[in-house]
Each structure stands twice: as structure tokens, then as C-alpha cells.
Length: 211
Image (cartoon, rainbow, N blue to C red):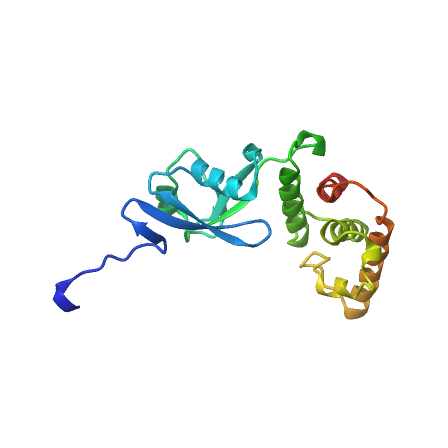
């Protein structure tokens, strides 16, 4: 190497200076944001920075997690310096934002933005197979999710868009004919909700209450 320089190999952080670094956080809608932090910043400071982006005030329900070196999900210890914590335990410096504490009733959540994040978490857990459902429940929940994400049934000339929308758990192996039949049942479920006047997020939070 020219001039005899030796470059120390570092973790894959985007380092702005000796005292700052940029870390990535994957949100519940699958978007990834970046946060600039001090190397002494705690996990709580990172969580608050994410909450500010999402306009969340009820941060005590949420947390940050990462994949450990053994590929296990592990929650960030929020009171500890984040960079040191990730250096020691994480497979890579990518964080995931998510619900850490569930409530028994939607009325406990005061902010609409909080309810929306709960909805995203529950929908994600159902689709990825972490929350197990019967086929009847899946159809019911999918109808609620479509109402929450797209609004009333009568806004659309047809329900063809549902074929491009993930409605069912990923581990549910369905033949093409069965998938089409279930999609039509979801469309009918969606149609049944067309006069519901609740806010989108309150309606969608029924995903959790229904289970």
C-alpha cells in the first residue's frame, strides 16, 4: 500500500467523523431510514429519533431490535450506548423498529400514529406466520386490512388489484384455483366494511383484537 499506510477494517457503519456515525433502521412499512448519532448515544436516543420521524409520542410501547451473530432477534438495551452494543452483539449494524409491548385494548393507545404502527406490526406478524390464524380468520383479517389500506370497496371499478396485494400468510401454500377463490372471499369481506366510518387505524387494529 502506498506510503506505508495501514487501514483498520471497521464495521459497516457510515462514519461521519470520529464522534458520529450513521445507522440504518428498518421500519414496519419496510422503508429504511438513517439516523446520525454520537458514538455515545444510547438506544433510547435512537428510538426517540425514529419516533420523531414517525410523529410518535407513545414511545414506551416500542423498541429496536437486531439480529445477533447467531441470527437470533435481540432487543436493544435502550439505556446502553448503541454503537458499543451493536459492535458486541449484532451480526450487522441494521436495526428494526417494532412493537415491544402489546395492550389488551385499543383505547389504551391515545395517538392515531401509535395505532397505525400497531396495525403494521400485527399485519406483518400475521403475513410472516408469527401470529397463527385459521383460514376463516385470515379472510376476515385480510378484508379489514384491505379496508384500512385502500378505503371503501366502491372506489374501485374491479377488485383485480387484490391479486397484487399480499393477503395471506407466506407459509400458506395455496393452489392457483384456491387462491383465486379465497381472494374473492376477501373482496366480499372488504365490501361488507364499505360503510364503516371508524378511522382507518382503529378499524385496522381489529386485526389484533380479532385474534
